[in-house]
Length: 236
Image (tube, rainbow, N blue to C red; front, top):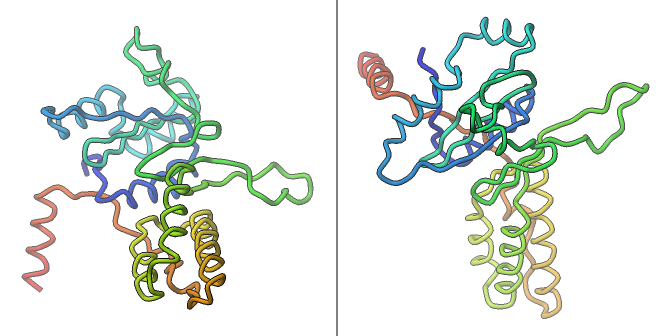
């Protein structure tokens, strides 16, 4: 199977990075944008080939055992990200040698920012028991600027909209409900209800936030694969 790299949605990008790539040690990253007029599929293939990304799981394990890093590539529309793990890799070379070394960031120090999200890999809030190593986990939240704009907007609407209209507005907030996002949305809701309480307006329940996160499909599948799937459905 060819290496799949085109994401269906922003939520798919976040889900794959947080639940898979960071969890497996792909901490270093560089992002970019494909210029208008360039063929995204052509750029995909160029980068995948240049950095040896389309390899088998066996080869990835073998590289890791030899201290050689692995890399992943992911694109949504014209935005893309390259991620690389611990070890030697062409991606880590300086630009003069064909790499991106000067531009690489470590998401444990500098969060990945994408479509209003901030994704990092950080220490867990609870200290590990028994003196074991500190645990880390992916941390997905609304980035600070986007959060402040969102909070200001809802606090302003709090005095000028009915409860039903505000409930619809909360339901339209697009961010996937990871735990840090849920806490941010609850903070916004508390601020809104505090403003409404001052005027004896109807308060909004937590249910307007739709706090359950639903996993999403990740990749855009090749046309031939989509057609084969459709043929199987029709045959059934």
